[in-house]
Image (cartoon, rainbow, N blue to C red; front, side, top):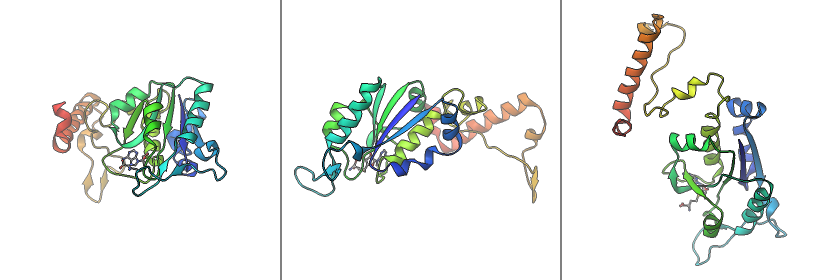
Length: 225
Ligand code: SAH
């Protein structure tokens, strides 16, 4: 699976993909993540990518031309399944959306800045708009990194223990059960006996019950669905 991220701040996207699971996925050749500097696609002398908003008001608006140039160049090289714009007014990212996207081949992600991007970029090029939650960040880079992480870890072969993504919160409509590791007794705080019993069916049953109970307490809305 290939991601092309378009940003004015490529430096912001270096570290998130250079460690751990995302780094391994790229090394294994399962995911390719390309970061494009929007300024390289500006034809203005100052490499500008923003301008004053029509109608006045505060904040700069990102211009069409650099985004259009970059998107069109990428599209001339391969077909894309989605052109996603990270935006607080998009559909809120959740596990079903991450699952859906993990089956795609090529995805472009646009990172906004300032007041946002010229509406015509959204009308002409964008196929999907995704928010990571009801709050506003300064740029689309962190949201894009969140989206890529959520999607890449679901691609088969990325996680070493493939079942581990399946038991994560939300994957089956439930939150995850609590987890413990050694020592079994830390200053009198003990691990539940059942986990030390070696009785796998009983442990699975306990985990399921814990997951249901946790979901009932913290996210009853998930059980309604
Ligand atoms: N004026 C815009 C916010 C601009 S914030 C509004 O009120 O909707 C600048 C950029 O940060 C956005 O264009 C978007 O790309 C990104 N961004 C900010 N918050 C986000 C969120 N919750 N989810 C996804 N992207 C977000």
